[in-house]
Structures are given as structure tokens and as C-alpha cells.
Length: 305
Image (tube, rainbow, N blue to C red; front, side, top):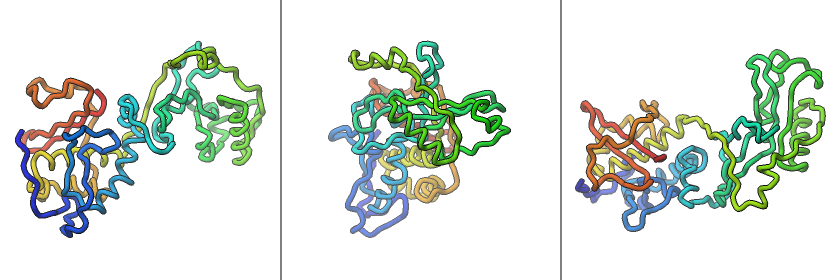
């Protein structure tokens, strides 16, 4: 596909800013935190500095650090500059006998600085008698727990089912202190012994634990995805196209948190078989596609391949 030249005049595709002094930065079509592609890195010069700074703080960082897609950065050897564990993602060990009392425990995911796995984090469990299931709280989430006898049983500690899981005695005691701070009674018990897989971790070059990762795609994440597609459309179709009024709903959704656009997650193959070798990547690159379906522009993005 032949690229169209961007306008000589600088007009921000998100806020319509025209002051040339405010266009000192460039916008990466795919956020720079996901890597660059040398001289072929697709960038835009039609996003003003204010919008660029807003996106970096409000959308790009959340997409890179706190989404399933963000985890792909570690598989490509890309780490962060600061340690900020994901909060909207949940990492859990499998329900397995080999993990003993740690079966189903919350894990820490990845260390943002190194990409190394964090097997176990300090946590508190309480049994919900209504759902007949354990509710699991990271140590920083205990403050959100409201004790209700109808949900958790009698206030008598011996009757209510609770437990603490922690990787060390120090962190076990930190959970105890957090429970005391928020007046949640707990009868101190002996700390669980590490399962063999964790106990022998230091003697292994690599520790492999089976588990699951789950998360929620909220509105801010959707906005981050749409921004990537909006950038992509501008890069290939030109600013003349995406500055048209037909794109206003998408523009307002991304920049001003406007009405949510329709979206869905699909398990279908990303490529349809109609693409040519020139536009399809054969490796695990991030793939994007814009197409016209029934007079409507449809964007597709694939972070996980």
C-alpha cells in the first residue's frame, strides 16, 4: 500500500491544534513501550505535544504495564524503568495437589524491572459461605474488605474460615499487621511450608509454575487500543482522511473519554488468507489491520499471536 504524505500544515488529529510551536514530539503508532523497529518504526508528526503527553500518562502506560498485552513485552526482552506491579491482572497458580496449601495462590506476575517471574505474594483468603468459594486479597487489597456475617459466617474466629499465604515469615507478619489495622480478627497459625517446587527454586536455573492470568478490559484500555488503530489509519490513509467528521466519535472516545465504541474479542484467525506476503508478518510481530466492511471502517489489532 502506498503511503500518503501527511499535511504540510500541522493539525493535531485528536484536538485540532494548529500552533506549530506545539509539535516538537512525535507519536508512535504502536506505543514506544512495546519496542521500536529501527528505521521502519511508524511514527506521526500530527499529534500535538499536549495530546502526546496525555496519552503517555493516561493510556500508554496502563496498556504497557497492566494488560495481558503488556506481558508480551517481557517475552521480547522489554522491561520497565520502575517497579510497578500490575493491579488489574490476576495471576493464580493452578489448583493442583503438587502445590499443597499454595494451590490456587495469587502470584505476583512479572517483575517490571527484570521480567522475572514473582511466584507468590503476601495475601489473605476468606471463605464466602454464600458462594462456597475462597475470596483472595493481595496485602494491598485488605483495606477494601468489609466483613459481613451473612457472607463469611460468625464473627467467632474459630468458625470463620480464613488463611494467610506469604513467601516469608516477615511478609506473613505484614499481613497480620494489615488485618489488625482494619480490625479483621484472625487467629495466628503456623505459616505454610513451601511446596517442593518453590523450596528448591534456588537450585534450579529456571522455575516453572503452571497457572492462569486473567484481567478486565475496561474503558481506558479500550481507548488505548483504539488510539493505536486511529494512529495506524492516519499513518496509512493520511491526516486528510482521519480529520474528517466521520472520525469524530473515535477521536472523542480516545482523547476526551467520549462514548464507548463497539468492540469484541475474537478467537478467530487474525489473517483471512487474502493478504499478500508483503503485508503479513511471519514472526510474532504486533499486527494491525484497517478495512472497509459494508461502508464502515473496521479496525483489528493483534498483540498476542
